[in-house]
Amino acid sequence: MAKRIDVSGLSAFYGSHRAIDDISMTVEPRSVTAFIGPSGCGKSTFLRTLNRMHEVTPGGRVEGKVLLDDENLYGPGVDPVSVRRTVGMVFQRPNPFPTMSIYENVAAGIRLNGGRVRKAELDAVVEKSLQGANLWKEVKDRLNKPGAGLSGGQQQRLCIARAIAVEPEVLLMDEPCSALDPISTLAIEDLIGELKERFTIVIVTHNMQQAARVSDRTAFFNLAGVGQPGKLVEIDDTERIFSNPSVQATEDYISGRFG
Amino acid sequence: MEISSATADSPPPPAGGTRPVERTKPAARPGDRIFLALSRGSGILLLVIMAAIAVFLTVRATSALSKNEGNFFTTFEWAANGTPPVFGIAVLAFGTVVSSIIAMLIAVPVALGIALFISHYAPRRLATPLSYVIDLLAAVPSIVYGLWGALFLVPHLGGLYSWFDDYLGWTGILAYHDGAARSLFTIGILLAIMILPIVTSVSREVFLQTPRMNEEAALALGATRWEVIRMSVLPFGRSGVISASMLGLGRALGETMAVATVLSPSFEIGKSLLDPGGGTFAQNIASSFKESGEIGKDALIASGLVLFVLTLLVNGAARMIIARRKEYTA
Image (cartoon, rainbow over all chains, first blue to last red):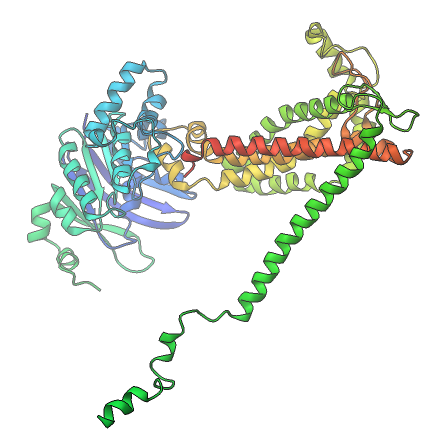
C-alpha cells in the first residue's frame, strides 16, 4: 500500500506538440500532493502520465521515467493495464458506469482484477469501499439502484469508492470537485484527508484554497507562452508555497497577479 | 377637485411606458404560424395515409377471407384462384419467420464484430474505407443479391450442407438430401448478407457515441480493451444495437425479390431446413400476383396484412426490451 512516485525527465506529447517538458519530482507516500497552475499548463496531462492514461489519447506519447518505488512504469514490457490497476484515478466529472447499480459500480474493478470472487467477500469489499468513501450510510438501502441516480457529489464519492475498492497504491484525482457544490466539495476534501492515511494521493485543482486545505505539498505548473510546453515551476511544502514561495511566478499566481 | 377629476377621466396614457406591459400574450409571428401549420399538417397527413392503408387492406382481406374454404392460418395450400378458393398462410408464416431468424443469427454477431472492429480496434486508416464498403453493400439492389444468390450461392452451398449433414444431420432439421440448395437456410444466408450493412452501420454509429468519460472510467480501473467494450461500450450501445437488429429484421421479413429469385417455392414445410421449398409472405405475393384473379389478389392482400401485423409485433417487442431497462440508460 502507498508507494513513492519518482518522476525524472518526463515529457509528454500530443502528436508532435510537446505538452509538458522535462518534469522531475518526487511524491511521498501517504501524503497529498496538489498540482496548481493556469489552464493548459499541462497539470492534467502530467497527472495522466502517472497511470499511463495519456497514451490512450490519439497521438499521446511520453518520454522519461516514472518510478513507482523502484519499478519504472514506462519500462519495457510493463503492461499499461496493470499500471492502471495499481494507480487509480478519479475524474473531473463523476463517471459511474450508467448501466450498473451502485453495488456493481464498486465491484467493477474487483471483477476485472480478480476474476471470480465469492459473493460474501465481494459484499465485504463493497461495504468497506463505500464506507471508505463516506457513502455507505447514504446508499446502503439502495445498493441495487443505478449509480447514475445519485446526486453529483454522491456520484463522485461513488467513483472514489470504485477506485479504492481495488486497493491501489496511488490515487490520482483530476479536479474532482470542480463539478460539485461547496457542501459536496467539503465532503470530498474531508475524505481526501482520511484517504491519505492509506494511499498516496495526487490532486489537480484550480481552487487554491482547496490546495491549501487538503495538500501537504504543492506543485506549481506554468507555461512560458502560448504554444510553449508546460513546465514545473516549483514543488514545495504547501505552507511554504502559500506563504513564502521561492519563485516569484508562484507568488504572482497565488496572489492573483499574473499576465 | 378639478384636477383630480381630470386625472380620473383622462384616458390611459398613450404609447410609451404602459403598452408593452398590458399586452400579456406574445404576438404569434407569421413564421411560427406557418411552421406550426406545416408540421401539424404533415403529422395529420401521415395518420390519414396510415388509416387509409389499413382500411384498404382490411376491407380487401375480409372479402377474400369470407370466401376462403380452407383455414386461413393452418391450411398448407394456396389455391386462391380455384373454385372454391382454398388458401392458408401456415407455410408462408413458417418460411418468413424461420428464414429471418436464421438471417438474424448469422448477421447480428458478425455485424457487431465488424462494428466494434471499425469503432474500437481498427486504425483510422483502415476503419474509414471499411465503413464505406459496408455502407456501399446497403446500396446494392436486392434483385442483384437475388441473382448472385441464385447463380453463385446456390451452386456453392452443397459442400457446406453436406458437412452439416455429416455432423448435424441427426437433428433432422439440418439433414441434407442432395438437391439444389434453394432452401430456407440458403434464403437465411442471403438475407443475412443483405441486412449486414444496416445492422453494422447503425451499431457502429452507436458505439462511436459512447461517452469518452465512460470508457476512461473503465480504462482507469485497469480494464483491457475488451473489458472496456464489455463494461462501457456494449451497455451504452445496447438499445441502439436492438434497434439496429430490428431494422435488419424488418428488412429480412419483408425482402421480396432476392427470395423470389432464389427459392423454389412449394406449399409444404420440409422436415429439414436444407430441403428445397417453402415460401415467404413477400415472395408469395411477388410470385403469384400477376396470375391472380380478383379473389387471388385479395387473398394475397390478406397475407400482406399478416406480415404487417408481424412486423408491428416485432417492433413492439423491441421497444419493450429497450424500455425495460430505461432506468439504467443515462
